Amino acid sequence: NDEYTLASLSGNAIINQTPCPFDNPPAGLIWKGGTDGDVTNWEIATNWAVYNESETRYQLAGSAPSESSNVFIIRNDACNIEGVPSLSSNKECNDITLAGIGVNIADGKYLTVNGTATFTSGIVSGNVTFGEGGSSAGANLNSYVDGTVTKSGNGSSFTFPTGSDGVLGTI
Image (cartoon, rainbow, N blue to C red; front, side, top):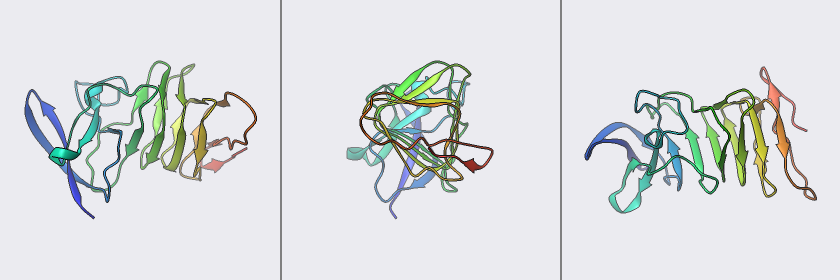
């Protein structure tokens, strides 16, 4: 395992946090939380980090996730990540990976996944819509959507990654 440092910026200064071990740093936006007085807000760009391969370090993302973003919500013993990401309005992403932490979505709002939602551990509390090309993988007793799941389009098979109170109810 190589160790990479998750960093946040304050002005131009790099403030190193706990190292996060990744064999291969993810290509996309990685949840780090804990900035601008709102540690859980999905919409704050500085709650997200990206890996800068040329400098072999993480840096703050330039923007919050969009419909084309690959999103990684990762928490493990080696990472000091703050807050569970929360959505207070409808948002989109391409792929999303949940590994160790979930996502909270406000009542009546949706997260739209246009690519693949990979469930390892972490529960999405709220409503998720999968776009026409959307898919889900890995739903299990520790990782699923506790809310309404909808799927746009037709023609291809789809597993609805639903559950509630530790009970998996994929359809």
